[in-house]
Length: 221
Image (cartoon, rainbow, N blue to C red):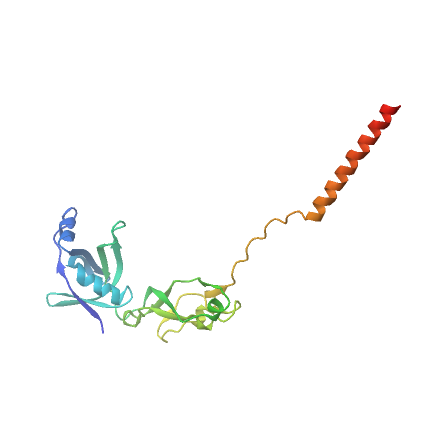
């Protein structure tokens, strides 16, 4: 079942957008292959709640008067300083045609290679592109890392579980996750052994004694 949001047609453009945002109104645009580009606005708080639930791969029903638009969140822009949403692009796809979307991977479970062997879990892929009808797009794909029991174990793209009507757009043998062994500390420089130092010292002392004896002999002559 699609999520719903109420929208209104937007008249404010350019500098007028700041005044909307201050009032908790989020500016947006609605477009698609079968509709004209339309500037719209909606309640910011309602969008934030819906975005947490739907993400960018769940169909949303936008209600404007007596019209309903089934859309995907194509792009949600945020302020780089505050992290607040400042603009959204809604895309209305053709529901009978497949579309591509990037779906986040959610890692769950516990790896024995991490817990018992002290390894580090490496997530080679954090999101993956899939192809499906708009209503069949998954919100997320779960990855169970409990199968990683040794450092030789790997989770591959072909191991990901998705519905039959969802096609993953990546090579089946690409690595999704693995565990690497703990890093060994760099070997410190090997110190000179005491025995070696002693031998060098003894050789030096013997050399000095020989020089003194030779000098004494010269003086006697």
